[in-house]
Length: 104
Image (cartoon, rainbow, N blue to C red; front, side):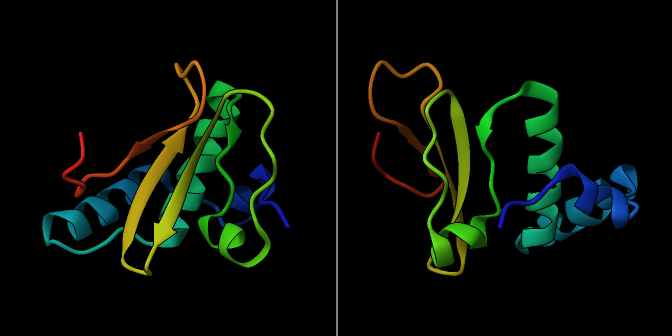
């Protein structure tokens, strides 16, 4: 069950309106919604031809697809935090990007 670009079209995504609404959430210290993250992942995947960028909730239920090339994936951790993993510019393994991690 992978999302396609068509799902964003069906919802008539107003990119500018969505950005403004979600910037308001962030400025008020609230979380981005899963819907916002999924929609922008689709835009990134289409623009940059990157693997991964699957629905963060999908991986929890069904596991993410195996990636054989460059990929980026956003993960929803503990139901209250987002992290990103990527193999771009890695010789082996993946990098974890976590805004609240103390590890360097």
